[in-house]
Length: 445
Image (tube, rainbow, N blue to C red):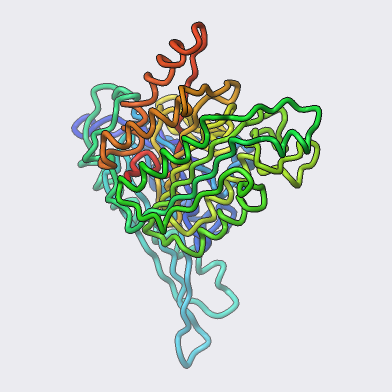
């Protein structure tokens, strides 16, 4: 992965903007940043921009190294990011029948953003013939030719780009029609809840683990909510108490891979006790299953592993709801590069919606993660249900699945959960969290 920051000084008759260009592989067919053709393309791209009065800036070698090792890094753009380009490259070759020659082609694809909004997609391709054995040089030449066409397309789009009069409000609630995705082809629900912890107490005699009376009601409420949102019962699987073992949870998540199609939505709901990150295997925290042994790593499935299993699903849309203490750990570990007016920053978590993820191609996962409390907090019960789950179900039913999941969070959870928690426990404020990759914030039921 490569990040190049470009401070572009265009003529006053057009505009003066900063432009950020990020090279990011969108599929296994894309070339890595270290490929000689990519390096040739980047050099040519820099040269073309300098000829147009553009200053090229790059992050330090340490940032490059981290990005190259994290192919699943999420790219996000702040509302004040200005103009940005997300670029990808693919190279192919084809023989020239009857000769010892072949043709090399490099295709560059880019999506142009203004703040969080996609302005357009642009592309450029270059071809060159070569004798077998000299393909590396041929790809470099093809890349340089592709750059010329890409830059011409980019500059044409930039001339049409809107002028800016200041940064937009970052935390503004996205417009429903603009943000919400089309409804999924099918929705699959996996609901996991542990309320009876007698077995956990037996396996861990020194651990004080109380039963959670609200979890049973939470699972039933979410199942009822999904059914009222027209999800057939045959597409909802429930693992409760003794069924909710670590192995069963892993297997159920993997089994979804054989059912959920690319255009389907997977809703994974998890309610139980949660352990803080300092108790976990990788520093992410974890839910307590029916057979968790706190001293045995094999019996623990932590939030990082769950993230990986969800990312591996063929479904492009996934909503994960975690109602456990310390469930904010579910939103950690999502590597992120954030582009904003402050430059390029590298982090490991996306929380809140101070940024919006940008996607490229069809290989990005649209993932939304809603947690009941921050990683350092406990989650409260409200009567026969968990406080967070009760308000989430209410929000989903009131909006009838028509609004984006982020709009539900903003309108029914973000302020309401802390307010109700202070009523239940004066002096305490339970804060839910929201994280996403891709267009996860735009998912609707």
